[in-house]
Each structure stands twice: as structure tokens, then as C-alpha cells.
Image 1 (cartoon, each protein chain N blue to C red):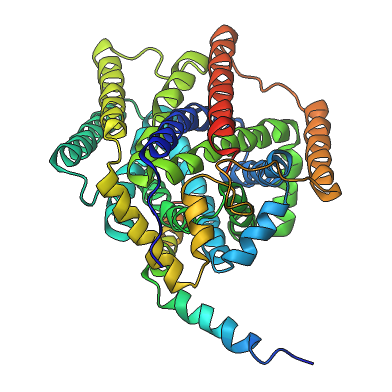
Image 2: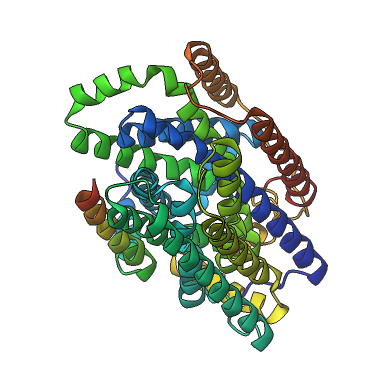
Length: 41
Length: 432
């Protein structure tokens, strides 16, 4: 028997993460860092 | 739910622990960069970085298991599962930054690259203020101290960068400066996940466990993608066999420094913790000049520039560190912690005990009972120890001129910091 609440709860956490500025600031900096690394290597 | 205040005596103790850990982090992080000098021996920078990360991975799974047991990690996952994402993200940032530092060292040298990537402290102050209420309601004097310290650090970094243009050993100094600055930005931003985790009450020993997954995954991907594929990487690893131990040891040393840095970030915030741990720049300079003979044969004025720049940076870091957190500012930290707890529905008791350095699995106590270790913990410790001993047996001393008395003196200083930080953490928080 599956837990009916499990999926909505999981989806809810991801929604909170993706709408959190604390997630996007490091993510964008990480992508920029990869671009710099690609250039200088 | 609003979290209760931490009593002022407890707050002072935690700040003192944070300051001691910040200085300890500087000594150990500074020493950890020394093995990257081996890049000049013909090992690819990506392989150097990968091998350091493997050492970091081993240390990061075995040290927490030895200190507290992996039970703490499971408890933290139950309370705040969303932080796994930030742990992995921080690991990715670290891996890219560390790779950039290897290129920076190759292009402009350790003594110069260090202060450039240490701009991460300025960024840490910015993110701490903007995202986590650090330095809010701190008063004019503390603002002045922090900003004055930041300006001193900037002046010191500029002086060192100017000196670099006169003695850079590389064909691509501009590329090296970009690499070092890029690493600084990535590392400065890496403290956003750190601070988020510790405001929520997570134990630093748990956070670094998730961190390693992002770190090793990113580093492997970079090494395969930029190293010419799996076969080329394997070939490079074969070539690096004699120095495997030294590079992984560098990673191990780095983990100890980083652990202290994490505790500093937790108890004095990133705006103060990062500048303190950035005294690693001075330690890096000492290793570079005393042990590896860097900057030999330069003019007196260039020596004065490099040393003066380093002292300016250290003075700036010291000023920032001495601007202690007031009760009002700490109340703003708690507001940020409340916000995190409410957003992700984390238990308020867990957040409060974590912030006050108590045991989240035993909220009533000032310090925790020692967590029980399982067979898994001992297995992790034994496996990591076995790997390191095996590699040490295979290792050959790099064919480099080293100043051994200076090396022994610096190693002794590191051990003193290790004991001082370990005792302070144990007495006050039982490593919580």
C-alpha cells in the first residue's frame, strides 16, 4: 500500500527549494564558475 | 514559533569557541594547499584536485564517524532533509573552486594566488548581511570595524596583486588572476549553504557528509570531461601513483581545517568566521616562503610588498574578528533561524538546541551525551586508515628542495591549534 501523502509532501519540499533565493544564488555562481573554468583550463 | 534567547554567558562561550576554531581553521587550511606545489612535477592540475578530493572524501566520512558516530547524520536527515540539497550544492562549489585554485597556483604561484582567492571573506560578509541578518542591529562601531577590516584586506590583496605582476612565474598571469578571483567568488558563495544549514541547527559533522557527495561527483565529472576521458584519467592516475599519498594527505589536512571553519561559521557567523579562517593566507605564505623557498631572489622592495600586503590582510581579518556579536544582533540571527524553521517546517526545539551548541537528539542538556558508535562507524574509520597506510607505503618523497626544520616547526604549530580547538569544542559543545 502506498503512502498517499508522500508525493505531495516531496513535491512541496522541491517547490520550497526552487522558490528559495538561497538556492538560486549559489546555483548561478556555480554555473558562472564552470564557465570561467572552461575558459582558463 | 519564536526561539528563546541563548543566555549571554553561553553566547560568550560559543563566540570564544568560534574564534579559536577560526584561527585553527586558518592554520590547517593554509597547510593543506602546500601539496598542490606538486603540480610542477608534471601531474595534471585536474588529477591533483581529484586526488585531494578523494582524500577529503575519505576524511569526511571517517572523522565524523570517529568523533560522533553516523547516528547524528541520520537524526539530522530526519529533521531537515531539504539541507541535503544545500550540502551537495556546497560540495559542487568547493570542487570547482578548488580546481580553479590549482590553475591559479600554476599560473601565478601560491604566495600570490592565496590572497586573491581570499576575497571570499568580503563576499561572505555581503551574503551574511543580505541573506542571514548578520551585522543587523550590530551598532556603528562594529560596522566600522568590519568595514575597516574589509578595506584593509582589500588593500593588502591589491598590494600582493601588484607584486605578482613583477615576479609571476607564468605565461598567463591574467588567466591565473581570473582563476584565483573565480575561486574566491565560489568559496565566498559556498558559505551561503553553510550558514543556512547551521541556522537550521544542523551539526557540521552531518553537513560535510552530504557535501562530499557533490564534491566528489563534480570533481570526477570535471576530471573525465576535461582530462580526455576515462582512459586518459586512468593513465594520469597511474603517473601520479608516487604522489597519491601526499595529495590525499593534503585533502585530509584540508578537512580538519574545514571542520574548524564550519564550527566558526556556526558560532560566530560567516561575516566573522570566514575572515578569521582566511588567516590561512599567512600560513600559506609561511609554507611557500619558508618550506618551498618561493619568492627567492627577489628585490627587497618586492619582499616588503608581499609581506606588507599579507600583514594588512591579517590586520583586517583581526579587526573583523574582534567585532563580537551583540545580543541585539544575535536576536536578528534568531529571526533568520525562525524564518528557515517556519519555511521548511523544522522542529523549533531542534533549531534552538543546534544554535546553542547543544545536542539536538537530547534537547534538555547543556552538552550532549556521547553518541554511540556502530559497526558501520568503525568500518569507515578502519577502511580510511587502511587506505592511507597503504598509500603511505607506496609513496615516494617528492624530489623537491624542502626546508625540513621550517616544516617541522609549522607542523608543531598546527598540532597546537588542533588540540586547542578540539578541547574548546569538546568542553563547550561536545562537537555539536
